[in-house]
Length: 314
Image (cartoon, rainbow, N blue to C red; front, side, top):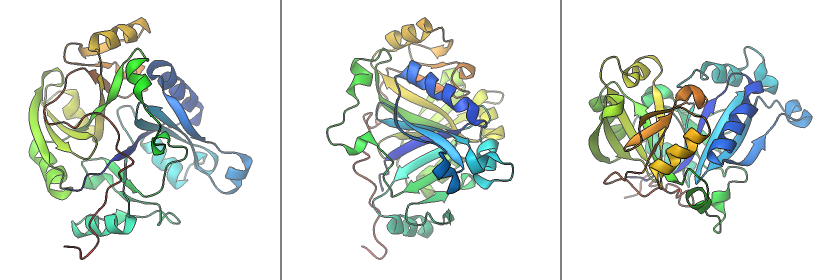
């Protein structure tokens, strides 16, 4: 197994005018902090910048809402069109995973049959694994450091999200991915990506079964839902990332805080609950205080990027 740490999770916003409201929701509700904001200044526009985005920290998890801007605001702009296509409710853009060597990562994934895509001019920084190769999850393997990423500072700690903020977030527990079946998920994540299977469990609130895979410092939870459930519809109509689940210190305290902000909660506070997606930027974000056997402890290990075996290594 090669343990690949999570660099960020991103999603698209169709209209850049809505991006600030999205940022404000996460700042006000989650205590998110903006590590870096990429804006279309006159200089950046002259260089063809095609999007705006905020690199936001929630504990040690970086989330990035991205909207077309500048050159990307025009119909027919490749990045802008991709973001507009990807901006439907319930759809996430994808994951970025960190490696120490892009050539070694390329060789490893290529040897396992993956078709890799490099954006022109970015060959030294990242490559992409398209959605169709990962149950609808767009995966970016990156070498470059993210601008102002606080996790690169050995002195940085995310403890205040656990100890001070009312949500009491200890870290990201898992990334839920909708799947047509558990066997289909195993074929992708266990066989193609070589991520060890941790185990299976039922998620009664979702009408689904879940099979979990150890990606690195977090877990992919592939969820196959009963006919007519939201998970099954997501797998059929949207695909890819279905939800995030944050581990919190106290589910009851987190629920009381969210209700106090006027937010509607779904699910069972005693096990796993979420903000209603229509009140959470169209995404499904769960909270739980339960520890799942076999899962890694919440916490980024971005300082230890994946080291793939060099080609020809024993």
